[in-house]
Image (cartoon, rainbow over all chains, first blue to last red; front, side, top):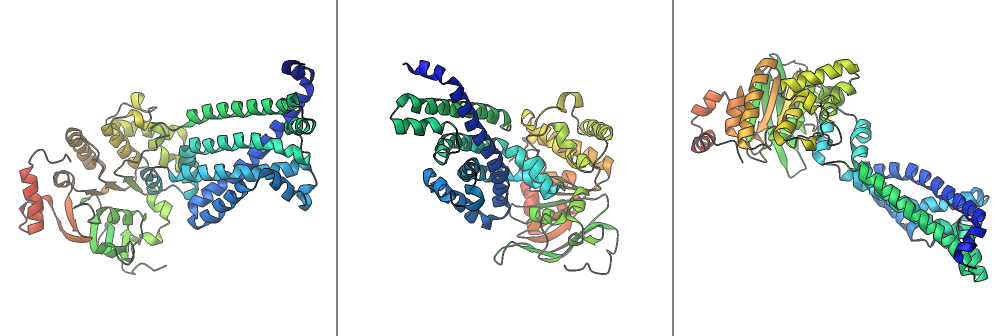
Length: 211
Length: 262
């Protein structure tokens, strides 16, 4: 049986798993942007927090993903549902590039522009919302892009704790020594990553401030 | 919080420095015991070399910096007693690198303070047109452009228009024409001189160009190493026999006509 035949035969399951995968990644990205961008801003506002925040995110990044899922399993509320656990673990991974790029983007805003904003009587909040964030948007988005591609890959491991997604095929294929099954998980995951990378890079270029 | 001295300014000084010092840290004293007053409608030029403390002095006025010692009074009130935001919206500010917002159009840049102050849309629109005309730019042509689509001189004009947007009684300008070539610089200076006369604002300009000081200033404050060496009218400045002033004037004479470029 050719790979194409295999894909066609299992079309419904593959689509189902892909949707689960997209859902896991989507929720993770919403959470990690929601947490990562404010943390990135905080790093620029309170430099002494930069070490603990970036350090913490760095450490999370270094924990092998399979181990991280394992560590979180016994945690009370987290371990109750596999998808919840997976999203939290994935969010921990996605945070670093987002925090780092947000901080770098804001730090990269021209000092003259920032000073003009202050001198014209904008409040800190107005400077952030109307000047710093819009001007660092493309850098922040570059971080989101890296995080998204990373998350799409790591999310395959989530199947190990039963969270579903394309990793299901990969783990089953490994257990059954069935390459077609592995590819049924790996190919859609790779395509998702490429697609997300492309779409976000287009958006990033559009939002890059003219100079 | 220290309190303002009980006695108000003797006359109607709009800006007053009273024994102001500003220390960056224990090593560097950027402004040393500076005292002066600027009257309503006057244009004071702070002239001096780089590092003489001119820009620092300027930033003490709109409270981008606060004095380490002494007081800066704006309209009789110490800047530290003003709400910083309110104070800054009361003072137009044009800076060296212009600081136009690259992601805003010309119109959005100019209308920033009116928008912050919640002006009505129509009033803001009319005001932007008026300002663009005032600085000699065609509104229909320039409103929707972004700063990077403008020449240096045009950007400078937009910077001035932006600072004037909410009609602040005070205007601070830090090397406002610094980035311009000598010809454009002369042109913009002349235009600004005209504006100056028409608007009657109280203005403080920082520059290291002698000719600019003489053209734009009603008085010239010479700064050296953080101190105010003296305040002169343009005539007094030209005729002064003090060695430092004479050195500036000699430099001007030597570069007669072409001074103004870098």
